[in-house]
Image (tube, rainbow, N blue to C red; front, side, top):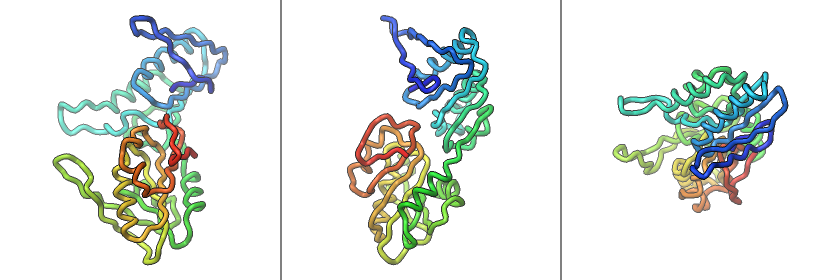
Length: 259
């Protein structure tokens, strides 16, 4: 979804499927907000950005892009792999925004490559959630060492992290071991990470925490994809609530709350 100065931009189409776009915007300042849904939005972004500059004579143009598409493909190991993040960011940079606002980038490579990037500080949101949900005997749990490194310094709580066990032929998660401070009494846990697709990592994390005596388990993920509804996590009954931010999720579910 694209918005211009807070108003949703609706694309129309000619019979052959090509875009027929109309944009009435008189302001000399424009914020384009991109809540990523599909790749066609890239070409729409290109068209309306050029229109705003050339026709509307917009002087200041910012891009608000909480979720960075292609951030998972932040490196290539083989010649046949396409470095999509690099080329995507080259596209964004070519539009020459005054500022590009992002949130909790999945890869620091993204932050290094984007021109004029401004990374939103979500520390206060995560700390408040942990303080509201957890008591002294409760823990924050990181599904892997990566999320532990990402968030550990901002959490003033007992912590533990997971070590995933995978089938290295398929990449499928088969379970995980836990390293860290697990209370000996019944405890609650808040799982924290940046992105969720089908939720397999969090399913196995919650399952293991339950085996170790966890009572209530909550999950915070900055970017929650619609595909979470297709995974085992939603229907497992293992988590009380999934907290996320308004970035990439387009569906509603009783278990998911945007903060």
